[in-house]
Image (cartoon, rainbow, N blue to C red; front, top):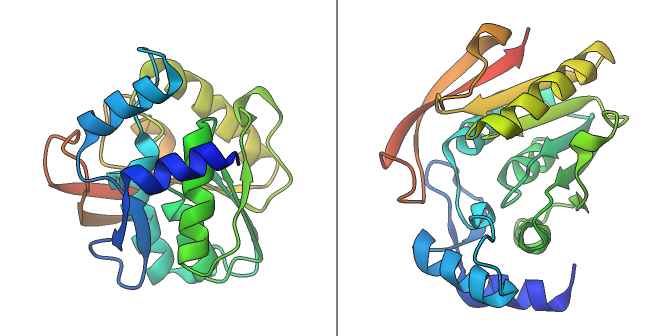
Length: 215
């Protein structure tokens, strides 16, 4: 984690409670578009990705709620949070008693956010900044994939990778509020929650988000 990324996250977010998840606090932004413009300026790149790491998204909120209710899903197990963003799901896994937790995200600002948020919640989360979808699934017991179905190119990469992980004996849990590219036919629903997202980029402040197991 570069100090400049850490400083950027701290400058553009504030540590605040996460609605519906008492006791969890994250460094979050209040508005998406000003932060996105700030990222573009910082990187001098008009095509810089959205700052997904600065918000609590529907699928992640659902997974974090599920792990609070069903901690046995991760307790004592090695967990990977794929596309970790803010690190919310990784933190929830750590608080639920996971033996080891890794958050993965290719955005360097997300790496900084995950580390800052894990520290704020007293949880150890290792961070991987490379694209794990280009590799074989890692040696873990559980993979958590929240909000990975918002665009087709990513969805087409995620699903076969998760299937390979499952074939390797890894339990796969998915959290999503029903986005367009969610592979519903490949999933079995485990739980449903009304969650309050922290970004106006979602079409509704309150969303029905679900947790699934890969069939």
